[in-house]
Length: 289
Image 1 (cartoon, one colour):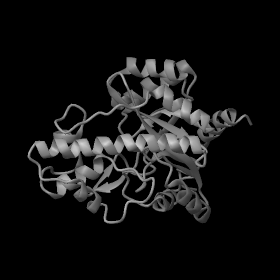
Image 2 (cartoon, one colour; image 1 turned 90 degrees about the horizontal axis):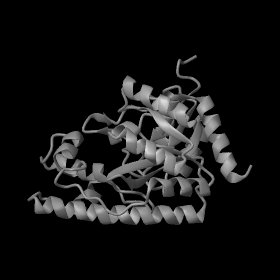
Image 3 (tube, helix red, strand yellow; image 1 turned 135 degrees about the horizontal axis):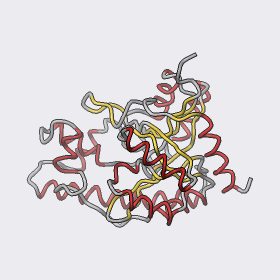
């Protein structure tokens, strides 16, 4: 038996947001990696979940309906993961549409700032770089802009594009009004799901993370992530125990850009199936089951 049998990667992205592969390909890869389950957690959209779940039936692997919601707190972008959400809940879908509209506004503002910096880049080029029509309810993000910046020689690779222009505090960064983490957690619960604070180590502010937990009452926190080292895993594991939170984890797989896998390869960060059972139980409480 593969040593990863019974393991789950609970954080992956597809072309429905800023991943490089169709949703079904993530599921196929998870099966090839010997995983028992994989979650599709695209940014502010559940557009790829149906395809992923159909592939789950084909490959005999459990596919968790997920989402990653963009929020703002303490002057930082904070992401909240939702698991086992009802992807047909119209109120939830409407709320996600509002987030994508804010994202679209931000994207055009970023392009404007990059042009002001003297960079020859247009929104049409970002769309063209997709190599396919943008499907309804899909989400465009900064990695798509980074692809164009690399192609045109303004950056060496995606990491360099973020470090030079797109990351928080850099000249091309734009922040638009976003919902608070507590709102995202409430939305996820209202849609019958379990809410989890994503990759807390990326925020570089553990006191802020603690306040978010106290204000938002999430069901879990992402302890295991491709950008968390052993020390971060220890800290957030202790925080999870302190607040009685489910310890989740995932690779944050986006596929390969310019030959580099971001954030980590699918299956490189996993949790056991009992974590899924705890998330299911938390979601079931929201559904009143």
